[in-house]
Length: 180
Image 1 (cartoon, rainbow, N blue to C red):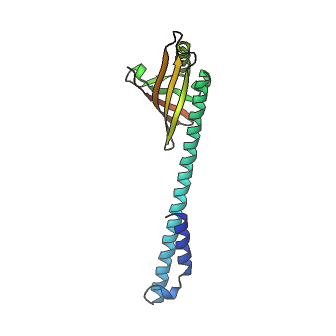
Image 2 (image 1 turned 45 degrees about the horizontal axis):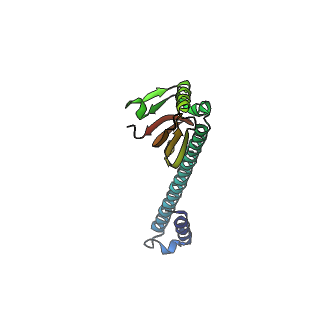
Image 3 (image 1 turned 120 degrees about the vertical axis):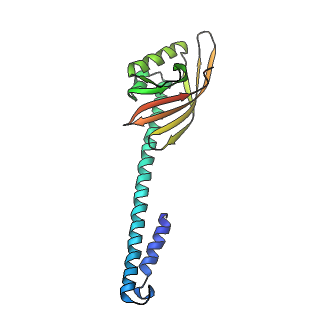
């Protein structure tokens, strides 16, 4: 029931006369009228709770999406420490370059990994194609990593990453790309 339908139901319920409801028996009419108001009240509470829950999820999803935007800003400016600080301690990673297993990494390990990558590709950038918030804990990001090595060879790698958030930090970073 949307807000407009709810308002119309409330208007109709208020307009009901006890004499137009039930069998003509005053006790029956009163009971029927009470049940109608109880149903209306329950509907109102469900609608209110549903809207409040949806707004809370929407707010958290927006915060996570903003955090992902900040993450990619740090990546593109090669501020590896600020990027690493966005992760929970010993965040879990899944990355084809590290094998099939999930690997926990500390913040210093994250900084070292990306610092080494930037040495090979000094102009390394991520071009975000699209972000897809999923509930209040996940954001899926489609992007392309580009860069040029010292020998002039170019890197252009489409990647899809699933970020999982816990307590405002990235707890999981699962990336998928062609590693051939």
